[in-house]
Image (cartoon, rainbow, N blue to C red; front, side):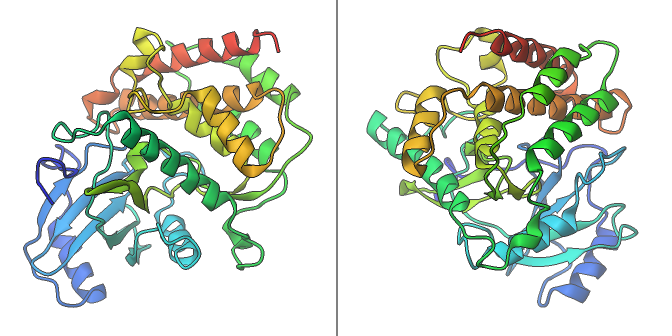
Length: 355
């Protein structure tokens, strides 16, 4: 594939380098036929777990590990992410092939796992400079993207024996309670308390709860496109937060990241995927498309929108908290508190909208 359109990596960030003295012996004990000198690069995408490419002479692997510092309960669970993908792969072919998992934190100071690298286009903030996709092609990419989430939601997790991927019933309440606590625990002096939003979410939880496998981080920069046929999405990445949960909450999570061309300057500055390109659906069109394709009916989507944005505020705040405590030196996180503040205000504005 043309290097100009590949998802390229960079040097390892200072303080986040892999310790080859410990890693290589472990790899040789668990993966056959690898050499001592891989070319190691680190992906800039992703603000949670650290992701590296290990390019050996005969293997091309991705390594994912947890970051340093305080971690929320249940977060950054690499073994869980590995085993979930391994079990889901036969029923959802877009999952990468799992290779090995290390549950011994003494090896690298964190659990980690390795998987085969998928070579294709991963849309980051913008599509690659050297592609010239017209509006029709972009529209096809967008539709294919949401169809992949719908396909995941249609996997019969009970029939396929996947019901141990999450707790299931009571998911909505657990999410609201959990994210309220996580936000409060990560609060710093320079962000709102969020109490108005938390109370509203607690008081407006839907009575109806449907269950399916949810990805919980479904974004364009977590899928892999075929270079010569970009509407063919053959890989779905980053399954850390996947669970048995409510599909409309999964949509709400994704829409929190979906920046449109009509959004204001600050929102556009937070954009991490090319959702604003001509040919992409709007947030309202996505909700309508999903409901039509799945046969669901819903008059008021506000709860799911507020939940998705508040959850994203919690994620941003957890990352900023780690930065403020010195657990990561990545300067990209320096101003995450401003995003947290903005998202809390956005939640309050949506709550105040008339139905």
